[in-house]
Length: 447
Image (tube, rainbow, N blue to C red; front, side):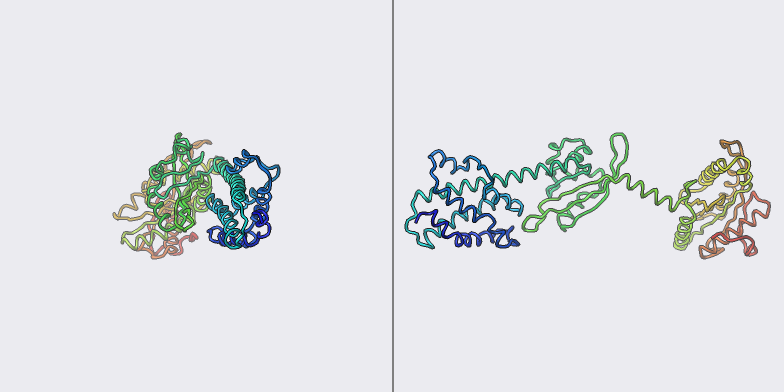
């Protein structure tokens, strides 16, 4: 019996032997028998047919080097290479599979089945055929891998996101076009650069973050702020993702960074619209109450009093009626600016609505500090306003209360300041009044 006849008669024992080898490969642990054997049966029959064909010495030499002319149709070996690529095999594992196939055929033919008439020429021919099948399989495998690399490179290079791969030491293995544009170096020149040094001006603890990803095998998410050549500031959200080898050890770090400048600006606009007055930009009623709660707790911790002022504009309605609402809006904006200029950055000026403003004065260390600020605000708001529609003059009435002397809760403080403001108006306007118990019920509380 010649070897081709032996192969056809003993395909299943050969495949059983080959399957035992295949199961030892890491990528095959989840594959069923059909997937394990994939195109091996067809490869064996193709090899048997090939050994029986007459070939010239030149043809046989070409086959032993895997250089036989391409087949008119896709071969079983090529389909095998495609399947192994899809299953995640590497080149070494694919080569090892063909070596195992060769060993299975020759060992079973000589040893296990004690085949008496295996000729030397048949053994040589089987080797030549397997070499050609291996070459076809690997050629398809490599073609698919190179194609995938081209596709992924096109995908990553065209992405507006910054994509990169790093050694665990921080050296750059890969950087796409967007990454290179930010750091003003061609992608090829970035390879080998220290990622940590590049990013350190924008992310202070980047070295600790990279080490943490490698040590914990957990993804890190963060934000970095960069300034472009023209001075424009951009915000990026970035990821550092561990890449594991077959032993589940972090062997590299992949990353991406996305420009979120517009998103952050939108979030800030939403936040400001929820907490700030749209006309003056000052804190609105909601943020004022939040700040008041916070400052009362701060005052309790420090032992330093805080002062709360309610400011209501006198004769503002006359300005609206005479010069129009646009002039009134312009005046409110200027009033906000003048009041803010009278206080410290640590104090809070808010607009509650209409022509009502409040001021929270924190850490009052001198008894006359509040009166000094109140007098300054009165002087500032008495000065004429140069508006687009003409000149206008107003004054204001101020009510003042002090924590903890007058009250211990935010609601009580608000009510006290409101009543003191009404007392100031009834006293002739253009002045200020400190709250006293006698003022209870004098004015309507501000909610």
